[in-house]
Structures are given as C-alpha cells and as structure tokens.
Length: 133
Image 1 (cartoon, one colour):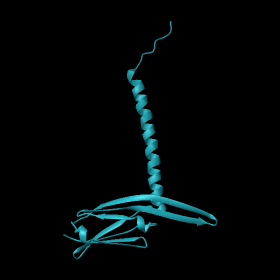
Image 2 (cartoon, rainbow, N blue to C red):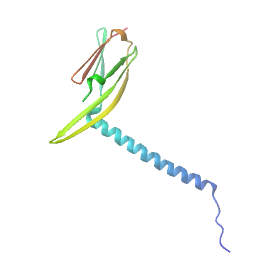
Image 3 (cartoon, rainbow, N blue to C red):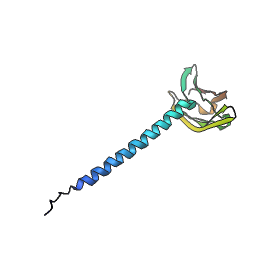
Image 4 (cartoon, rainbow, N blue to C red):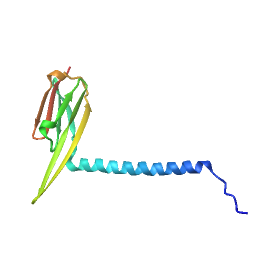
C-alpha cells in the first residue's frame, strides 16, 4: 500500500500569501522606479516658505511648466499648486515630448489672508506673496 501524505490545511494559504507578497513587491518596485524617473526628469517642484515683515513669501521653480495650466489655491493655512509640465526635446529631425501632471500641497506656518494674496509665475519661477493674519 502507498504511503499516505499528511495534508496541511495552512500550506495552501501560506503559498497564497507568498505569491501575494511577490505581486506587491513587483508592483511597488515598478511604481517607485516610475516616481524616481519622473523626479529625475526635472519635474520636481521645491517650495521655499519664509516670513518677510507682514507677508509670507512662498517661492518655487516649476520647470517646463505650461503657464496656462497652473492652478494655485491659497487657503488660510495651506497652499496647493497643480498643473502640467511639458518637456520637448529635439534631436535632428526627431522630436520627443514628455508630458506630466503634478500636485504639490504645503502647510503654512502661519495663517494668511487668501483673498489678498498675489501670485506671479514668470519663466517657471513661482512667487506667492500672502499677507499674514
């Protein structure tokens, strides 16, 4: 008579979770590589916030930005900047376009009057001047 194999009910579940871990590891790796490549392509936006007298000054570079497609929302305690980047490369007769969307939210250290805020975007340089409350 053939030997009987003892069945382990948890073996199938353990195998399932091992496969699920592999799937999520692969997914997160591809996601993080995409995020890194978009940041290294010059689409990152850094914001600097400083107090100057009665105003709060927020500055930042938005490389390769399309000026008509930038939205800036200033609230009492935060600012949200969203828009589109367009990078054009020409190599002889070949043209390459890279387009991406971005959103950046930043908490403000003090409350500001959002109705009297002045926003300027010139040549990829964003300047927000908001009076403190």
